[in-house]
Length: 431
Ligand SMILES: NC(=O)C1=CN([C@@H]2O[C@H](COP(=O)(O)OP(=O)(O)OC[C@H]3O[C@@H](n4cnc5c(N)ncnc54)[C@H](OP(=O)(O)O)[C@@H]3O)[C@@H](O)[C@H]2O)C=CC1
Ligand SMILES: O=C(O)CCC(=O)C(=O)O
Image: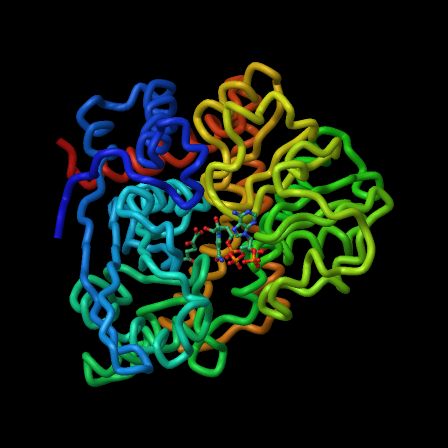
């Protein structure tokens, strides 16, 4: 177990991190908010570091009998407002540095939504598509064993992220329950509904992105039925956001997966384009529209650009060429520090990830409450409550932005950090 952030390492999209590691990006963002709020220097120093980082070796027997050892991480950033909370990703580019940055972003995301959680994030360095289902199950169970004592319904509650899904959460829950000798549904969120999951959790991050895009478009007087939208990434977040905006009347002109984008200025039928889960690799095989590289999608002349795939895609190199009028961050950390500076200079509004994609953790919170109350919510209640919570958070951030004349990112961080700092002051944990 380590407790300090490492030096710069590569992030999920390592080609364009402009020498800023994810942690450095996260610290830059925190520093701006700390200055605006005049936060105590010591508290700022503390919040630059995670509380704990677990690094575990995971020996797994492959189906051919060979043993392979994978590396897993769980970074726990801060729990002053409640148990650590955050997803687990399976991806070849997972690093300790990335998990730490993502855990910091979870602290702010939970705080901006006013959820009683702190921030955590974990991952395993693995391409899940290269494992069979049985191998993925063995790997997940081994990860749960290695994190015994670190995770639990009142300590740290994992959830899905890139490369993991409700089945992964079911295995994690089962492994933790076996260790404890009793069924503990609250140890993870994003489970299948048959074992205590919340209806609507899978669609929630994308639904939240769509709600925030709708509110932001209205703020800038852009009518929904005239809105052109490009979405990078057609997985859980991107496809759900695209389809919902489409159903509200927006014109989704481009979507992409890892192989590339399809573009049709007259609008794509998003319900007809299969996501990776529905049919892997189907985006660029879709009949209709022009095929283009992901990089070109990011520069399309659209009203709204939603990067919803991986981190660090908007960089100092391409920021000047982004032609959208508004960016809504669906992915975590899609905008590098260098790109953010250029967007600020250009007065191009960027609605940050910690607000825009917070729908997932918000519905995770509903799931956690259902575990405590032993009572499930119907889908309509989930959707209505999510709508209320997202709009509430949006309005608080918009007020802060307008009153202090801040960027959207700074305003969001100010709302989040002021809640975390107040909790630390009240609990007397600081200094
Ligand atoms: N799932 C969740 O609960 C939440 C996720 N997020 C964040 O949203 C982002 C996407 O997550 P999620 O939708 O769950 O992930 P998925 O794995 O479901 O989807 C990711 C999508 O991005 C595509 N993609 C992968 N790599 C690239 C690349 N280099 N360039 C372009 N497209 C690429 C994938 O293509 P292909 O299908 O071909 O692999 C897929 O369409 C991540 O940053 C995640 O952290 C944020 C909040 C909650
Ligand atoms: O639902 C959760 O607990 C976490 C979701 C997540 O990892 C994220 O919002 O980035």
